[in-house]
Image (cartoon, rainbow, N blue to C red; front, side, top):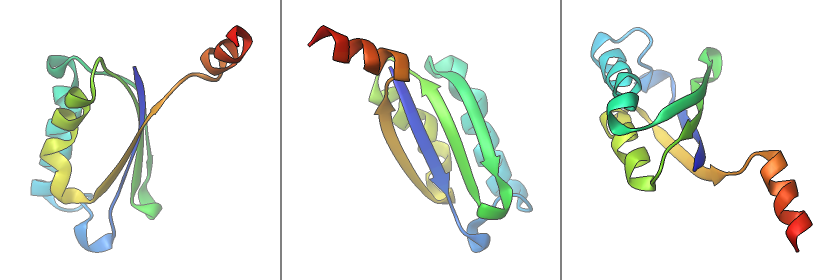
Length: 94
């Protein structure tokens, strides 16, 4: 399954210049393989204090485990998604 996740925070919780918060972010990113998650893409908007990720996982539980270390860094909005081609293929089946 593919998931699109957006993690956002504000300047007061930004981890860019906070070594402890930065370590929490790195712990999550480095744990992906051991949890069974493939990071398809990860993109940052530093001035907007936002991280965008496309993740491949077998379950939502893996996604929750992945984001757990950075839960205190801000809000995370997660959605299961399909590739556009898969969505179009589904429309053809109807």
